[in-house]
Length: 265
Image (tube, rainbow, N blue to C red; front, side, top):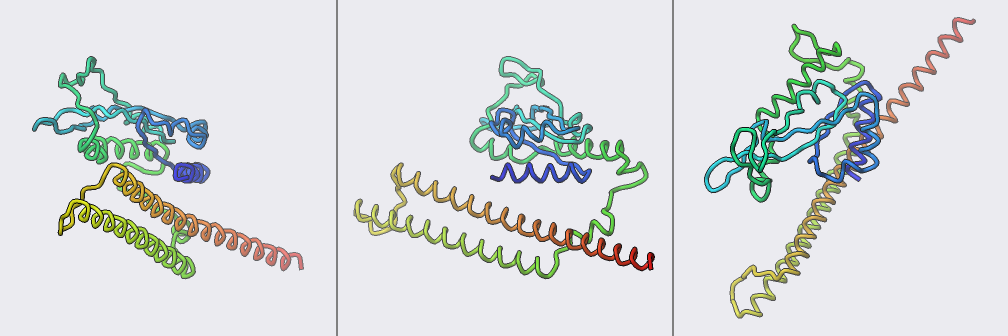
C-alpha cells in the first residue's frame, strides 16, 4: 500500500516536469513490485547501485569502526544524481577496497546504518545541484530556486483543508491511544499472571516466547495503523487540492467564455 502510494507520487512528479529520488536495499524484493517496475520503465528514469562503504558508512565491532558495505539501489529521473550515486566496492574476499574487513549490517549497526553518512548526503546534494544546473532550473550565480507564485499558492491549505487535517490527526491520536492502552493492559495481565505463577509480590516481566511474539505483533500493527492514518490524511488533503484545482480551472473556463461572448456582442 505505502509503496504503491509513493510510486503514484513519483508519477505525479514526472508528469509535472519535476524530480524524485527513491532508495531501497539492492537485494529488496520491492524492486520487483509492479508499481516500481512501472516507474523504472518511464522515460529518463534510471537505477544505480552504490556500496555504502564507499561513502563512509562504518559500524562498531569489538570497540573499533569497520566499513559497512550495505549495497543499495537508487532510482531517480535525475541523471546527475544517479551518476553521483554509482560507487561500488572493488574489494574481494570480505575485504573493503580500503583493505579493511567489512562488518555485517546487523543489530545495532543496522540501526546506525539507517542514518546516511555525511559523504553520501553530500553526493546526493552534489548530484541534485548539477542536474538542476544542467536542466536550467539553477544558475551559477544563484543559491536556490523558488516556486512560481501560482504554484506556491496551490500548496497553501484552505480553512476547510486545515479543519479536515486537524480532525484526521485527532482521530489518529485516539486510535493510537486505544492501541497503546490495549497493549499495556495485555502486558499488565501477563505480568500479573507471571507474578502469581512464580510467587512474586512485585511485577516481573518474564514473557514466554509466544506472548512476546503476540506483543511484538501488536506493536507492529500499532505502527502500521499510525502510518496508514498519516497516508489517509495526506491523500485527503491531496484530493482537496485536486478538487480545488479543478474548480479553479472551471472558473477560468467560465470567465473565458463570458469574455468571448462579450467580444462577439
